[in-house]
Image (tube, rainbow, N blue to C red; front, side, top):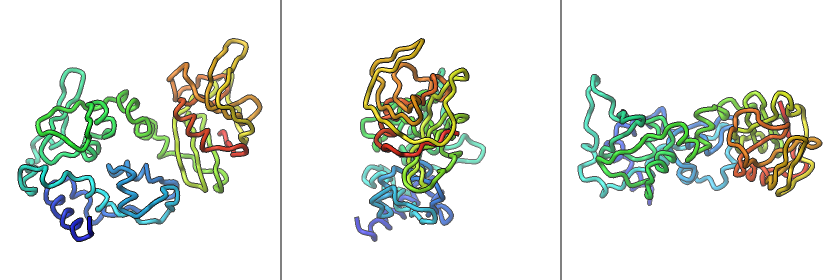
Length: 305
């Protein structure tokens, strides 16, 4: 799509939905702050990372830096439903709502669930922002095979916390545990490093001072605490058996030892992440443990605070 056609599409979108007016002069760009990632910025504005990167000609999401100005308008325009998918002219797609009436995108309560009735002009990423939830969880919960296609009058179940944690765990970590917003920052700021916060029950991966990932963990219980201090990965095992005086666990995956027999590893025997559960090791889901296993190498610093 050439630039002229994209500008025409943008004008039509702004006239079609009042929600797009939020991207006015004050919201047309975003200045990258220290520690922000493409994923977090895209999530904030209801975009996908690919849309944000494409609109700003970014090939490697790891190479953004503080002070970089990102264009939000054209990234948002890329999500809008095509004009031929609307039966009414764009200017009439959303009827004005009187101040005393219920807000446009207000959910309705049905039993123990909140629901939302799809209106003309709705699209999923904007609904995620309006309904204060993850659009990925919204799509997953409602089994939308093509998330960009919404049918006017259809009913969507609004995700509850458990749904968001199931379908979009990274958004859940940000929304419910705020581990991204209160990240500790890197300790070295050069190369790759891992930071573990015991109070927050969270683990962070940094590369050259920029946050790459953050997830919930379960560290040592009060009687068997995780050792604090500055350590480093000294041994990696794809999988192994772990045993002690009162436990024996087969097929423990993605194991990385960072101090004596203390390790970061995957966990299949519990899902109570966010609470101390271990004998001193750092428990992650197997998916998260694999990510950190592939991120870190022998010698990668591990800072436990």
